[in-house]
Structure formats: structure tokens, C-alpha cells
Image (cartoon, rainbow, N blue to C red):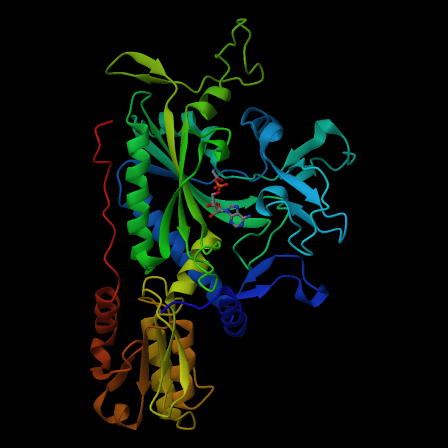
Length: 473
Ligand code: GAP
């Protein structure tokens, strides 16, 4: 099973320290959330898995980390100043403000059709640079980035020349993005501050772009499954031509079933990520060479030409781009929803078990003393925790009876519990309990680290296929 709805996950996340409402002591800040001790581990593990998969295991992708605040001209030439907006309407009856494209002509709050005409609202967050700048000084205006992608495009030549890369190759980046969403909501699904994992894959102008989109869709489906997400909860959505972003010739969204409680004909699915064919739009529009029909430079502000010279064909061109763009927060939510399960014990009590893939579990092993009033047992348990820590993330806990401690670890997805008991003092062995089966095994302390590592690996889902593209580009 997976979670019956997002609310179940909100409650678990707050109760167990995955995610807290932000600024709660001041009444909160609409749709802002803070990651707690377990949430930050889960989110870091997802990001590490992604980075390892793309940057380390493949031979054709480099990583970067660019600034959040870029020169305003980046957003002029990327097209975001002119086009990055949503249509906004107000309900004249209840004064609710909404996105016109999400409501089918009726107020989402009161159902009234008495709405204002839609008007465009630019979603980029504005700020001013410099201590002396006035709020409305246009020369000081800057934006918080609404996508990490532009930081990659403006660094294309830096990476290509310093790393001596040949097309095809990709540049990956993980980082915060900001959008002044009109209707944020549904927990961490739509927030104004969020994190993206984006990769721009640069290919030749005559590559099979549309096929490459399909290829990246397949690779990402496998990656999401390797994180433990069931294929039944993933679906593809070909974005219709009239809804494509200004830079895209084709976009396929991978959707997740975030709303299983809704009837099937209503919107159960929401975008987890998108894979777009961005053509050469961005590199070309940030370059100083291209001219319009009248021979005028399209970008008189750029100092660079971001074209690429192909040594083998002796041709110069603007590389085309396939862009898989995923959200960290939406992946965290999908992983939590998919891992959620309930199990009834012999006493008839229902327990929550978070069946997280071991690679993502915030804590890999909990070391639990059977008696916390026995200094020898406590000392041995703490020593085991310390010895495991360099190898895997382990915690020590003695804040309850053993049944309660097991239940707490099950609820946060810890794959293994290690119990130290009276017998351990005699035989230098401990009991290892499995989260999913509740089966127990006796293991020698000297062999524990190897044993746990082996078990964690064995229960990890199949790793996705790594490597470079199989298509001739
Ligand atoms: N560079 C292309 C781009 O940014 P996007 O579809 O607008 O494409 C990519 O965003 C991903 O970023 C989305 O699929 C989603 O996972 C995440 N994302 C976008 N807006 C978000 C928001 N307001 N809150 C949380 N995640 C968001």
C-alpha cells in the first residue's frame, strides 16, 4: 500500500521530525516548510543518489553550483521577464485570488463565476542589490532564480572549455529556486521556495531530439523506481503544444499519484518532473552573434558567443538541449507516500511502517539496549553505535521499552534495529531485527558492520542502468 492521502504524510512528517511548518511560532508563512532532522537526511540521500547516478556513474555529465541571484540580463534574454507568468483572476464575491488556468471558470473557494478578467502575473521574486539602492530603482533590480537551468547555460562555455568536453555532454545542478506562486499548497508539493535537480544535456542540432526525450524519460522512470517508488504510481503526460513553455518544442512530464483519494476522473496526478527539448533557444539567446531579419544583434548585452566548434566536422553551431528537470521536494513527498504502509501486530494494534529504500532511510540502524538501568548493557550499546557510525548512519535510543522503540524506528523507516541484551554481555552477540518482516537474527558484534552493510545492500532496489546514451548522436 501507499499513503491514502497527503494529510497522512503531513501528520507523520510533523510528528516524527521530517518536516515542520515554517515560522510556526509567528503563525506560519503560507506554504513554507522546514526540514527537520529526519527530513534533511532523506532529502540529502535523494540528492546524493541523483548526483551519484548522473555525475559519478556516467562519463558524460559534470556538476556545478551557480549563484541564486544572477545578473538581471540573464532573465531578460532567457525570456523569463517577458513570459514567466501565470494568469491571475480574483473572485468578486469572496475576494479569493487564483490561477485562471486551474479553475475552469469557477471560484475554487465559493463556486461563483463572477470573476475578474485574467491578467498576467510574473512569478519571479524581486529584490534590490546594494545598500544604497531604493526599492524602485530599476538599475538595482534583481531576481531570485526561478529555475537553476540558467546558471548552467551561462556557464556552458566555462565548463566545456575547462573540462575539454565534447558534445554530447551534460551539466547537472542541484539548488534552490523561487517562484511567487499564486496558489501554493498541498504541503511541499507547491511552495514558493523549493529545490530542483536539473540537468542540461547538450547535443548536436541534427540529433534525434524527440527520441532523446523518450530515452531520458525511461532513464528517470527507472531512477524513481530505484528509489522505491512503484511504477503503478507513475504516469507520463505529453504536454500539449499550447501549454509548452516558451523555450520548449516538446515536454513529457512524469506524474505521480499524489491524490489517490480523489476519484479517478478527477486530478489524482501531479507533475513530479518534466523532460523538455529546449532546442538551442537558451545558448543562442545568451550569445552576442545572432542577428534578426534586419541584421541587428538580438543580444547586444552579452560579451560572449556560446556556440561550439566541432573539431571532427569543422562546423560551428549552438548545441541543442534536452533538459530533465526534477523537484527535490516533490521527490521527497512521492518517496514518503510510496513508502507508507500499515501492519497489525499480534495484539491487534496497527503500526505504521515506512518501507523506505535503505539507501534513502535517514537512519540505517538503531542500537537499542534491552535494559537501560544496566550500565554494562548501555555501555556496550553505545560502544556499538560509535563503532558503526563511520560506516553507516546509526543512532542510540533508550527512551522507552523495546516494543515502543521498535515501533518508533519502523515509523521512520529504519531498516534494522540492533538490540543489546543480558546475553550479549556473555556471547558478544546482538539481535538484529528487520523492519519489514520483524524477523530477528543473532549476530556476533565483530561481524555486525559487515552484516548490516550486506543486508542493506541486498534489500536496496535494483540500481538503474547507468552509462552514456545508447543512441547515436
Ligand atoms: N528548468 C525547467 C523547469 O524549471 P519546471 O517544470 O517549471 O521546469 C521543474 O520545474 C520541476 O521543479 C517540477 O517538475 C517540480 O518538480 C519542481 N517545481 C516547480 N515548481 C515548484 C514549486 N512551486 N514547488 C515545488 N516544486 C516545484
